[in-house]
Image 1 (cartoon, rainbow, N blue to C red):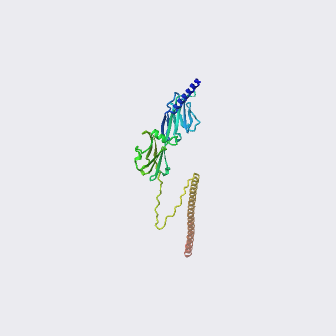
Image 2: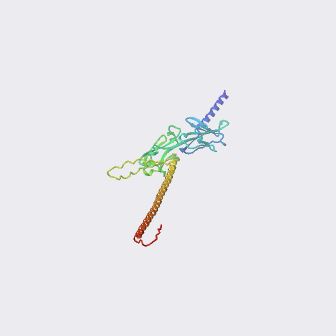
Image 3: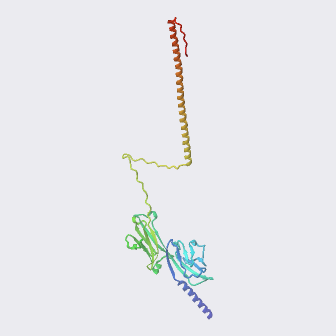
Length: 338
């Protein structure tokens, strides 16, 4: 009976020691802004990382991410997870959904070695309540800076860890002292900044910093980007003071068709060829007509000369006849020359 009691007492001692060791393990708080690459250190790692197991404790349910040094590919975000050579857990492009507690454990032959190396990941994110088209001079804008964790309220963490959210400008000056900015902080690890934008705020940066016991842990930057101004066309001057300008009909832009252009070129070539042929025909007709006119003129001249010659010849005969009548006594011989 005494032996059984001793065994029960020994079991209780071992169990209490394990519970005390697990619950008393130190938690390391790390802070990153959304979009960064995160590295969570494993302080109790053994050589080779084949005994290392990383778990994610979200909503009191432990989910294995790395088992025996091998990444679990059946997890939703396994593409962004990897194991470093020193057994640290790497998370690429961290988001607010990655926040919460992580534990690094060592198992040898199925038996856990030592206590967990616990890391608590806080993710800082800055956003604007206005859309990009509303970011311009003269408009009011509100920026929100929130530190995400896996608890409904971070009031306990803020008090115990000395966490504070601070808005600063590009030079690192606290904007809380500037009356232009209205800054409101709540217990939910949330700080908002409201201001009216000025012309010189274009491309200006405002940063939300996370400090732990006055030491800077991380920061998230918001850069003001004004939308491009809308171009306005200057109306054309009215040429007449008595009548309004008639509305201009919209101009239809016609896209040239290669086949239509080819047909137009062929048509122009054919028209030019026809014009040349017609011109040549006209010139030929005119030249032929002139040639015929000249030939007709030569014929008329020859016929007129012949008639004149005949008349002269006849006249000569008549004259000679008359002379023969007058001077009948003279014997003269005449010959006609043609």
